[in-house]
Length: 196
Image 1: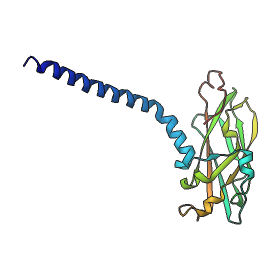
Image 2 (image 1 turned 120 degrees about the vertical axis):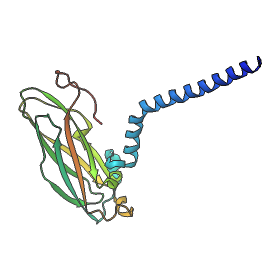
Image 3 (image 1 turned 60 degrees about the vertical axis):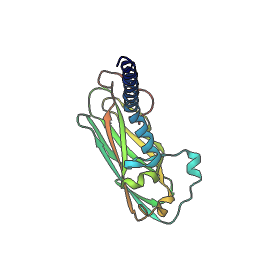
Image 4 (image 1 turned 120 degrees about the horizontal axis):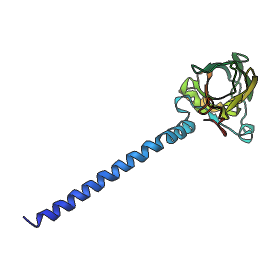
């Protein structure tokens, strides 16, 4: 009986070590889940996440005859005293054609506010094909009291959409933005760097 006690102790330590390792791995995954999910969405277009393209990448894309209409939607988070709207609600073009659209934002408050725009497209399956070359949503936007700005987005819809059985019948894509106040903006701070 006395010899069984050390064996049981070793087994208990091994089980405790295994479960301790599992707990640490779960904690690590918890911290990594947001950036991993963001990377997954950006790579696949999941959940309407659009893609980024460089000017050089866009230059290799050839437009095709298939028409596409882009509808623009602009929103502000509750409590953000901005007016935000697309300059034009829709824009017609063709798959692969590079287009530019403008959005207007105005700070209606008496204090400077830094905002960031979050975005998606619908139908969700078109996110993998919607490429932005330049967008106001890539950076934080600081607006002084009463200031109004005209902000561009340059984009194209990849012609590969025409070969996707889940997306090829799409005639209209909605690009939706929601501006929210950036963390630190209320206390006079201004976040630096890029958004999203």
